[in-house]
Image (cartoon, rainbow, N blue to C red):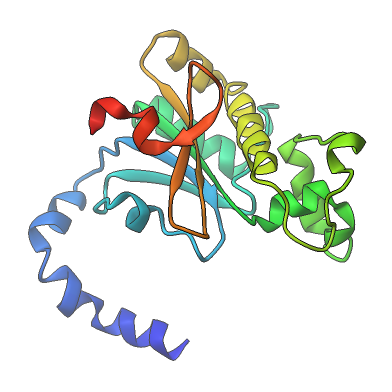
Length: 210
């Protein structure tokens, strides 16, 4: 904590002053290019991962990068989605899961979160289901295969599309939804290929940006 406090003390002189030309215009407004939805996990830093300056990414972070389905109940997630899509007119939404996600582990193996009842209730919003056959052979106390995270990200993409602002923007062809997975083991990112539905290396899916 000491390091966090000391870093904050030095921010204004060491960071802000050196990059004043970037930060000062942001005081008058923002125009992010994407809504980035990811996990609260401390090992993920969206701006570091994407090499983005402040002002480029509008973010939602929660346990498990979960997007609850729209049900007319105001939540932090639903309000932020509406603001990003209908208010700020972002053109891209990235749902970024990650390997070894404790939330996905809790969905696969509910016993892992039985001592955390609020978290268990929150994970119900994920709506990701795994059949007994899929769970068979998995080590409930260890890691799990990456396909479980892929399934989880795909479900959150489906949940996102239930939000009216998202459905409207996507039907007007002004919104693109992306599913990514950050692999903690090697720092690589895989993305869902819109054509095949498979998760492939980012550089293969977005070859046009290379």
